[in-house]
Image 1: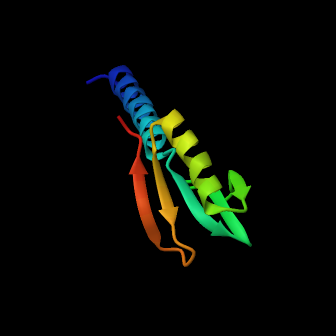
Image 2 (image 1 turned 120 degrees about the vertical axis):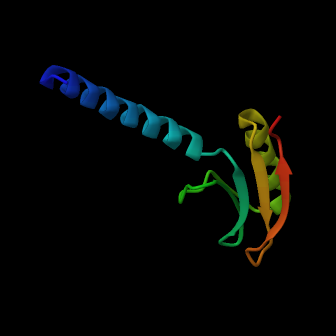
Amino acid sequence: MSKGKSWLRTLIEVIEVFFDSAQRSKRGRSWHQHVVPYEAGWAVRREGNKRITSKHRKQSTAIRKAKTLARKYKADVIIHRAGGGIRERISYDD
């Protein structure tokens, strides 16, 4: 095998690895919405984010907001109890 072919083959392999990892990172990110206790009320937070999406005084309002986002992105709503445990999961994935 000539040096030209091995160099080209190596370049192709590097490009394939790059594109494969880019595809994996896109798949790994979800739009699932969590309704979580926050300060004196409730918040909606996208799965994997530290920052909250919205703050609400009542859990029912936070659930309504989370459902709207989940429908838009075909994701799930995960509703947490005041203690942090999961109370319910609603799926809007077709």
